[in-house]
Structures are given as C-alpha cells and as structure tokens.
Image 1 (cartoon, rainbow, N blue to C red):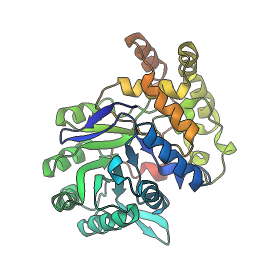
Image 2: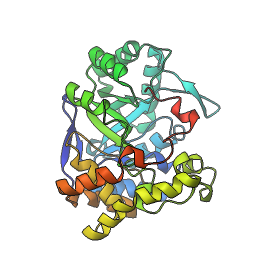
Image 3: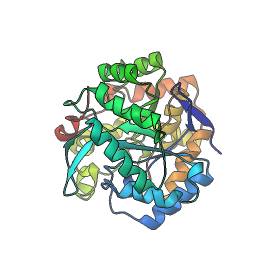
Image 4: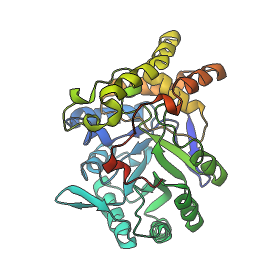
Length: 328
C-alpha cells in the first residue's frame, strides 16, 4: 500500500502517487471504458486514493467515467477536478473564470461525479480577463457552502499564486514538472514552499518519453496529443532520446523500469510533491505504483539532475496554441 502525503497546510491528505485520468477519455488515442474502469478499481486496491479529472477531458466524459467507477465507494477517494474553460459544440474555445461560471461548473461537475462535494477544485488555466481575486472568491464561497473542500491552481505564475493565496488559502498547484520539464525550479517551487502550497506534477513521465517507449510524432495518430508535440518531432526527438539515456541506464542498474526511475526522482524531491502519472491500463498503473519502492541515493539524484538539466532537453514543451494558456 502507498504512503500518504499532505498537500498544502490546510489538511488535505492523499496517496503519495495519484492517478491522472485524462487519457481515459481524451488526448492519447481511443477510449476503452472497460479497461479504464478496471484500472480505477485496481488503483483503489493499490492504495491510490487521489484521482485527477476535469470538465475539459472529453469534455465532460472523464468526470462521468470517474463517477461511475466510484459509485458506492466515494468515501475511499479524493477527487480533484477543474474548471476554467469555455466550450462551444463540444470544442474548447477559450477561458472563462467569471465567478458565476465557476459555480455553474461546480454544480455540473458534482452531478457528473455523482457526489455532494469536490475534494480539490482547481482553476484549470488562469483567465487573464478576470481578476484572480474574483475567481478565488467564488471558489471560497463553494468551500463555505460545503461543496468544495480545498482549492488549487494549475499552471499559474508567481503573481497569480500570491494574489490567490491572499484571497483564500491554496492547497495545491498543479503544473507540469518532471526530469523532462523543470521550469518550476528557479522561482515557482521556492514560492510554493514559502506559502505552504503542495505541488501536483502532471505529465511526470514526459507524456511517455521517460518510459523509454516513445515514438516519433508522426508515428502517433492525429488524435494523439503527441502527434503535434514539438519534443517528439525531428531532431528534437533524436536529441531527447539521447538525453534520456541516463534514465534507461539507471533503470537497468537498479532492476527498475525507466518510468519508475522518473517517478522515484519526483518522490525524492520532497514530500510536498504528489505526482499524478496518467494511464488507462492496469499494467502501467501497477508499474507506476512500484516507483514508491525505488530508492535513489543523493549521488543518483545528482546524476539524473545533470543528465536532464533544462538545456539538455530539446524543443518547447507546448506548441504556440497551448503555450498561450500558460500564466508565465
């Protein structure tokens, strides 16, 4: 069974590894609800209690799937979901964090999840047209009404984090962080520790790149996010395979998988970090959970830090469209 960790200073306790549910309905190939439901069952058996979803994943289908999986055993799970986008005809067309929209989405998410409360409610992306104080004020109203327990932000910058936290305590920041993407290290991680906010790293396996099984962008179908990922394209791919070689070498030396080494690196970075590797298959879930048993020495941590320092990774983490939503 996995150990527990605290996210933030407000009392939110979760399993040391969570499960990112996005790929069960969106972004990474076709859906397989039967296997996804079996994977969610297995997660609970392994002691994974922290499940990450969002209205945007589908949209809406992911929350519905998680609600089905947890029916009759809601008390065993910590559910994190997100608001902050606007949709037209099922397509994401922009951000929307107006206070009234925050509350509308919460009600819809509660219905889809089949629950009376959301454990961790994130603003999915910062809305530059709405002061964060107004958005977090609406989120705080949901806490006071008992519909939400804890608040979070995703991909927010320093100023936004400080202003949000002054309005109502923030328990977690969800952002991309891994051996593959370390943009949080200079300023964001020190700020989180100053304020007592936990970090939930998404894409902790570099969208599969750090598992050693990545393919070139053109080898993924157009429906797969990685088809358009700059780091999977052309010379970037070749350089990144070379940069990740140390992860594969260390995995072989330690009798682990490359993905387990990448997750263990994150777990060793601090007990205020809770990675959420995503999968829709039981085999990968079990492999990921095994990372909690992998021990890395300070020397091994330093080797990994050096092998995948930011300048060793080639290509931007997002294309221009997705990067426009990032608040830094």
